[in-house]
Amino acid sequence: MDNQETDSSLLTQMRDGDVAAFQRLYQRHQGSIYRYALMRCGQSALAADVVQDVFMGLLSKSYRYDAGLGSLQNFLFGVARNLLLKQDQAERRHQPLPAFGKEFGEEDGEEVLMSETTEPADVIFHQQMTEHVRQAVAVLRPIIVT
Image 1 (tube, rainbow, N blue to C red):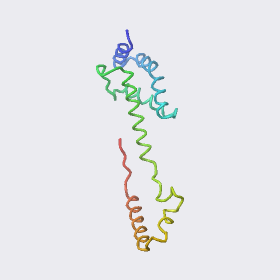
Image 2: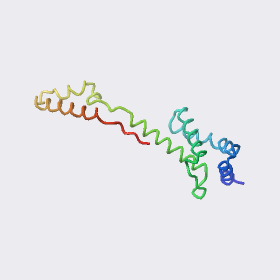
Image 3: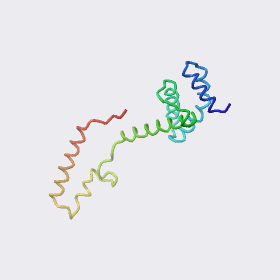
Image 4: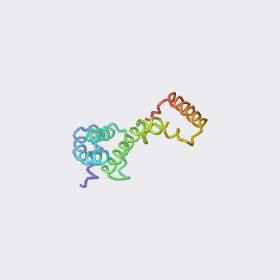
């Protein structure tokens, strides 16, 4: 019997409540899923969490595997990939944006604006606009995507 048939039969047994079938599936695939996740994210704790989420989703039937669409192993890798992408998006959403001018070493970009060719009205306009933007950003609610 090849792995796909064995995986399919183990999955059927697992869904019928056979704990040993789940353990065999876990032992067969957890190492490769962990290595894949670790390679993608570079963090052992996150890779372990991804493996746990993949198998808990499989156990709780949150993920619907269709043997007609491919092997269980490929399906599990796809689930791990999606979980890692979701994690990466969540981390990027919570990274603060740099303040204007900080990359040049100035405090809020004031030195850039205070050149000899800058009109005083332009400086005042920029300061007012900066304050309006700060106030608008301060009242924004965080976006939480589930």
